[in-house]
Image 1: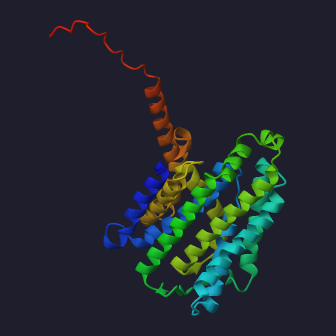
Image 2 (image 1 turned 135 degrees about the vertical axis):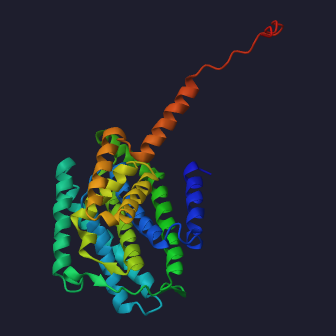
Length: 333
């Protein structure tokens, strides 16, 4: 059993008892962390393991939320309404990712990032103009429906369904990262010319990674729409796209648990410092400056780096030489 899986099981066991510990931590807060944590993991799949900086992930989160919410409002009473709406939201995000990625992947570096930013603003404009999205009011009062006989109107039931969906999404990302496909993505990130010289079509693999990242971001968006029963323009705004970058950098780019830690930090600060109003943005900005200046690998990244250096020092330390047989024992002091 890998260390990653052991840590995941510990976190899962802790999350299972949250509804039974009232007053210590609220299930709604944990559900928000899970939604944004999975969203950050989706972004990290693209940035940390493929080396692509995208400012379009809010478009994937919001488009999935809008599609899921609209279908639930219309067909939420049907027994299969929730599963169909959820899958449709993920599919919509994947299609938007294919459209944006197909255009942006032709460029590299800052040009790639700017193309994703421009196309995400088009999605924002469409969300304002379309009537079925609710315009500036968004979609409110989205019914949760039921899942295989489970009534999701109960917050406790919704919490455990969200936990199960989060666990499935996180394990999917972990599997992708540690698969041969994930190793190839890291090879393209580290040395793309060498990967091309070995016969791999780097553009095709980067596009596939982009679509997978968009689908997982949409997965988180569908979860969020059902949990909070609300989809707003903030979900497709540039602010959300930059916020997920902040979460990933704070936690640790290219690590499995880093985005989760970063999401928990940002969501926690926004929740517990809400009384200071807009100053919470200043606090998060200062934390980001400190992190970039002194902990450039992020919280989890720095921890893993220190542990790696410590193990290397212990490995290089010469072993104690055994005393030769028959040597006189040291005299007592």
